[in-house]
Length: 563
Image (cartoon, rainbow, N blue to C red; front, side, top):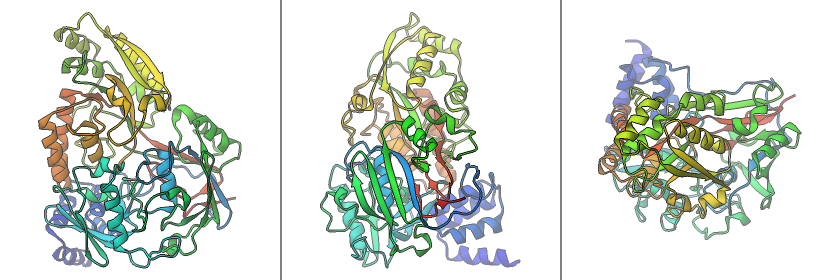
């Protein structure tokens, strides 16, 4: 027995049944090393241990060791200390309130001075932050988090496990957007102190992905002081690497680095960080081109194509789960018959959409939230492809052979208006007339709060969904019978049970098995068309070390200027 095998055996003897099953999956070649590491971080295994086991057990590399995806270093050199980093960010849609933030601009601001129990990075791995470690019980119905000691809020107050309990209960007891992930998962009163440094979560039902729901993926959940009662904008209170200097609504935020940050290895290199708000994407791109900012946290191919291929800029490209949902209300004509919905889905040339709208920087969608980036997605499920003749036959069988007219609603943002026109053209080819009603985001979404948005009444509409590290929220909130953002008004008991089974599954084998059934069911029912999952794009000039995530967060602690 060699030394590596001996050490793996030692680790196995102290590992749980779930952890050993994960190692077995890797050793048997059922999962790649990258997926092994990703899944191991969810279970609370340390990265050093996971990296060692992955190397010792071998297995398919799946494109190399886990690390930043995409991005081309065009400037060269290492980032240096000092200076002020300037970042262009979409203007937050409303007040910077941890309870109500539900947009990329708002979440990105929360994540600069506030911190989460864990950070979901660009590889979908969970990195410990305020939680030092975590572990589940045998079935994943109880999760225990060890809270990091020696962390202080910006006012010098020590962070304790009581602050963590108070933060979670604060969201559970109010109409928080965090409930889109925690609703039906964790009930008020079930977050408790196990001891003075440990928090225990007793869930409503087993959940194999629960740590993601407390991470930066659930962007509202920055840890707050137990004394917090509101008005976060006045202090930007948190424990993070940046502290508030000035904040001007609609204009931006200026931060200074926190010299007392608990993670001494990640005290920011830059002295200051200016986050500048721009309502329009084109304005953000022009600001980078004109030298007003050094970083654009997110841009689209439609609005920032000029940055692609320009050697003056470094483009960071991340495979992600962000997507558009073209919902069809199953309880309203003309979409009450699934054959009509299937026909609309078959009319689209998805590969042409990916090439035309994104220059190839997107994955094909298959009308379910299971993106290719998710390790649990079943890749054996056949991809739906354009078939105009079959679409016409389905319409004929559904009594709609003569066609019909329907209004497609959405908002003026990114590539969405172009997508709407392409849907209109595709529908025309099968005899369906689609009239477009494209408004601004305020008119389409209305009061975008948990379970209370106007777009939910639209019979046929396009909605944008941001990235998540696991598909749980997409499944339960967007498609579940009681989902608060169920725009298709899809109610299917079989689907709900499969989602329950998927959520409870611990290992990737089990998750993929259930995922395949969900993917097949949604292809059959087609309550919505999900044509693609587009990549997250960020850009910098003369700056290296920026770490964006598909969610829209960005970490600037290792970022600095280069010559």
